[in-house]
Length: 563
Image (tube, helix red, strand yellow):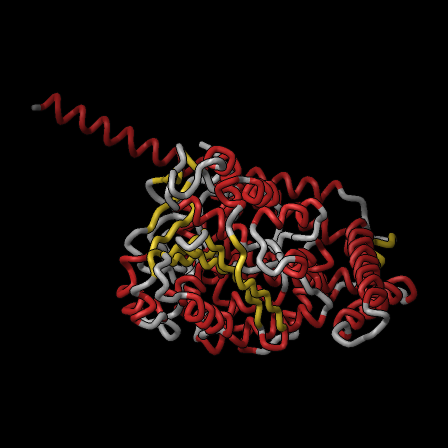
């Protein structure tokens, strides 16, 4: 299999008369729409793709795409250098970004003499505005869709040309919308349209009957692991699945799609793992209202913009993750309710296939095995017993100091970039100040560190008791397991209460005893006893099952002997 660049090098000397326009050519021109052509158009009113080559060499035609290049620049350079594509005229290039209108829209027409025109809609670029508009497609009709339709209406004329429409990602959605909403007389002039891994539209924006009416003139192409193109997936009969050189979500990039002997390298079906993700996302879309999703996306993206993020590539690393969490904490109840549905659907929503196995599944499998679970309890008890007295206090202190230091560092860096303006950073400053005060209290106030450690351990103990109690309720037929869970719940709840009421030190038998250290020793002993009990019960169950099997086998042999 070959890449798009290798395809261009292979057919680069062939004219469109020798080798007619194909699906792979639609991919090449849709990919070309991702490059900014403003500098070239300023110097030349009617440039060709070959005229763009100096701008590429000078770095004046930047790639407007999120993430890594994946070879897009090499593909575009080969395209502009080739005889096949280099002579195509660039007509009516449009590039608009208006954050106040949630608008990111770009398209261009490539003309081949007077034979045909290809209208290419750009997908989502690297701007936060573009991604916000992309998210709103699942909620409502957007301004970009209206502009895409207007552009198509202006350019498709009864002049004897063949007209093609195409686009990738959000550009595929715009190509779909423009094709289906064209007036009947202009739709008759359209030769074909390509929707390249583009999402569909909710029923409110585009009735399925409109897509069905245009089905004969459309081709939908998606990668083997597909997520974007399965959102409100349009029911297009000519849907094809193409191989990619990369894995998982990286297959969304056009530059990774594969070609075989000048045609698309097709697969038989999509990856089952992407089916699971898509069913989860589809259930979330069905279980949230358009109003909830709109509020959710608006608050999230507007909050990120207030944090100073302008492009998606900036939202990476711990600092950005912290900013997202802070913004989510400050969102409305509507947004929180909508976002809560997504992990619930992933964890508990019914899907037609099983989720892919992960390393966490292997860990859970270890704890489902009674022998390995018992061994883990004994090991945890031993580790806790070997810890020196007061070790948990030092661990707690180190944890809070590290968190406070990181929070202050990231807050100061952000304030420096924003010239010390507090707007949009008040929550972050408040959290940092609170953590610093907490650390100061731990150092200056006698007994504060002990109190904080005790409260944390009590919280963990209460949650543990609730979990053990819940398991005991579910195990109605497993009497030994239920008894162990009840004892674990009582023991854990008792430890939680003890952490809240015991003093730091007390005098016993004439010596000063560190009560917290003593309590950890008791917990260590409890874990070890719990593990040994589980191990004995597992052995007894094994022996009972083996005895029953032996009795059944012996009885079967006796019956055969009698017969």
